[in-house]
Length: 131
Image (cartoon, rainbow, N blue to C red; front, side, top):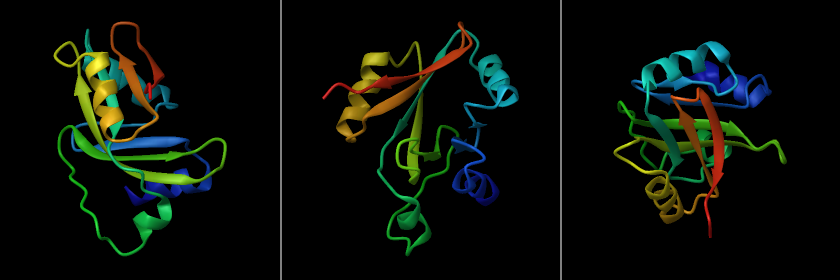
């Protein structure tokens, strides 16, 4: 995971999601091909539950990170500021979880947006969380 984080810090990647079961860069066609294939006719919602900067991640650890099949770490670079974040993330899957439920979950965690990865259309997009 550290080498991927180094890539994000250096600007070689815009971001990366890391769980036990899912490891992908939205901008990497090979990664996303595997994600779309695994999703089949489902959608995946990637929701951060923290607002942790790289400085907080690299400092004394007064927080926990759960790495499970659908829980892990999302590393990303803010395109406007260049600031790097390393957040806890949870992956939810439709049709069991709806887009509106995932957005509500994100809102409860103070998030501005989530990522929806759509297996059937083989596409992804960022969804704004309505205040």
